[in-house]
Length: 282
Image (tube, rainbow, N blue to C red; front, side):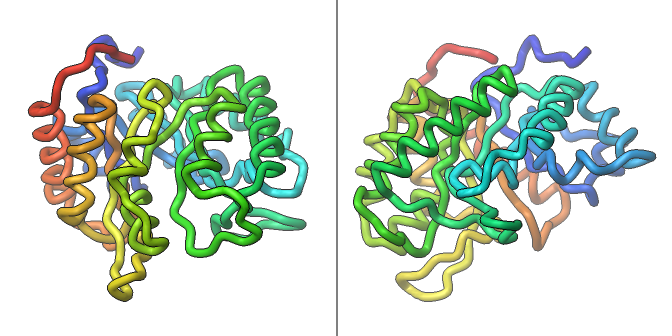
């Protein structure tokens, strides 16, 4: 069984990439408290890859962050996929499962995360689908605030839409700090005010990542760079306002050596240590 007795809110995690498997199996750095994976990247595989993955999930804490649930899309929910997903989450004792507040398919996969229209109708539609997923999976579906670059048919603000979905679905929140910062630059709002409006009691964990600056007023959420100072500052503020919670560093390409990734995790730990302590453990 996994040694989870001491897994607490003051923890730092890393997105697991396949190229890191050999090094992690040989000697996992102690700074990594948990891993996160997209289940879609592991469900199809067997053989040695599945065996190596199982070795890690049997020993360490794991979260899952999905890519293809299509929670806001027009297509019916994929019930076969949800059953496969439930088996995967149960098999590997996944602690938390999250997905993007977006959609990725409409009469076929779009291979991107598309923005859901910020409308009252969409709030009701998405909330009902979240409840359906939670019933099938028999666990909470944690919803992530996403980066977006256009807001078609907008009636509500991003903040109003997010809060309305969380309330009607009665679901937890994965608070992506980098996405708040990216959206605040791209859409001209106050990142601190957005952060302050988040419901502390719903935040299950945090994401933090780097991005690409294409222009002074256009940031691209790439997960392909080191975390910049404004995002670190926003994470510090998150801990102060909403409490220390597990925090996952996303790095999806331009992957540096594992030692460099661990330096970013060390900085997360430092911020957690100086923040006001709040009790609670997984």
